[in-house]
Length: 189
Image (cartoon, rainbow, N blue to C red; front, side, top):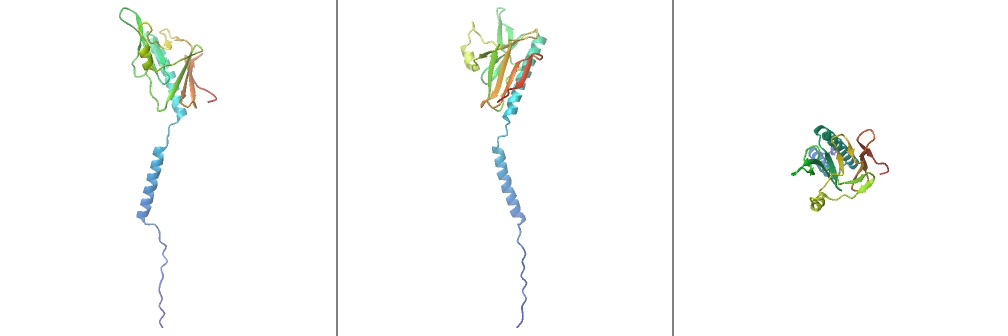
């Protein structure tokens, strides 16, 4: 009897290159789908940037009023604002008109933002621009809430609270003692 020696190959079976590529592709597609659905908006940063933008625009309007020797103003709405300029109308009367300028204009942020305005310590009820335009008459035209005079004054004293729709993050733009306009984060929110 002849003993037959058979070699048994116990080679371990590994993954082929194709299997690895398919697995990596599937994982990449799943990770991509998850990343696309993640909301990367940082609400606190967006509200802060919005408040800083409003403060800087108000300072710019005050400076522009001094340099151009004209009166500027700003009027707020629950979710926006616009700048005004006092110009001479027919007949010599001065009227407030919306000021169209690329620096002094509302910039829509990626989140819903609410504005609340206190003038000289009294809260102002804000209405949408469309409603105000419809209600405005020649005897009672739209006027700004805050005026930037050509002598450098900003009047009256104001506090503007800017917050996200849920009220989680709030900043305040207000009349300052040293600087004309101050922006600060509100505590406890």
